[in-house]
Image 1: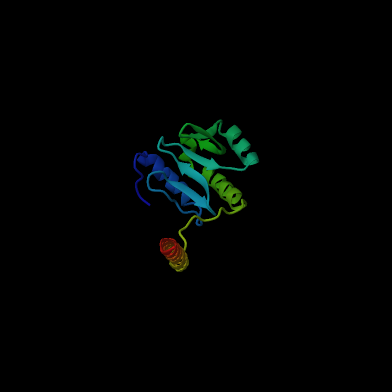
Image 2: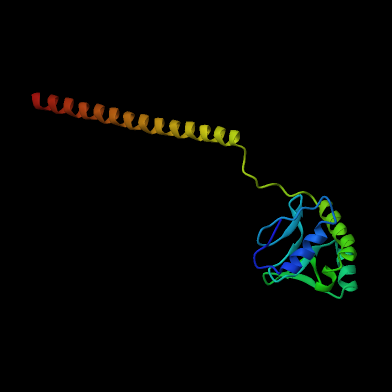
Length: 170
């Protein structure tokens, strides 16, 4: 996918090499490389050059103990499901590849997130037509009320004039 702005090239290369070990995983993100499936992110390479994997509770505890690492921190926030990968371990792709598989398996077991893609143009045009009809109907009602109001005002004025004429004659 190429260079990511502000990320150390050696760590980016190691991250991409790790991702390449799994055929179903695709790297995403231009400035912050990450992987996701079904709307769930499961690994990322932060601007600070640290890589993190999203793991199940059991796998995460095992990973943290085995590699003497901590939970990942991104933008001053502890990411509870993500284990930070030590730089030395990141370079050992063959050793880290099974952990990537565990991460992928964990995320695919989660309920898919609903997409936030834009609705198709057919639905949009149908909605636009419906709203246009509604606004046209509202405008027609307003003009009808105005006309009715004007008619009523004219009638009232005629009645007044008629009363004035009758009172003058007497």
